[in-house]
Image (tube, rainbow, N blue to C red; front, side, top):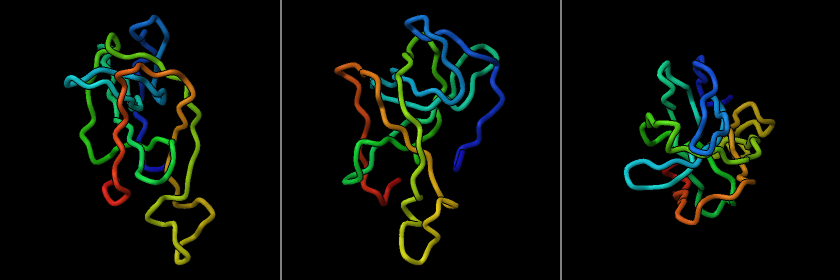
Length: 131
């Protein structure tokens, strides 16, 4: 995956609803008093999940991107819930100009959320310059 280093996993673990989650899945999770969405980067030996938060970009659409400006979070699977999503790729925003190659060599991962999220789940929207 472009821009993402996927670590070796300890294996799938059960989320709060008994679904198996693993590296590469999108989950809704609670941390620091917030409920949001994230990408599972790795599963630790004790089953803890290393999660990169997702963000939407202002004026771009509903797709979600990795928020690499935020630190990765270590989260218990008991506060996570699997969310159906559709992965895709887009030309990286910083390369989307006539002076760069538009054929995907400089792309970034995006996810379209297809599953239902909780009413209190918030995915931050950031200006493009901050993502």
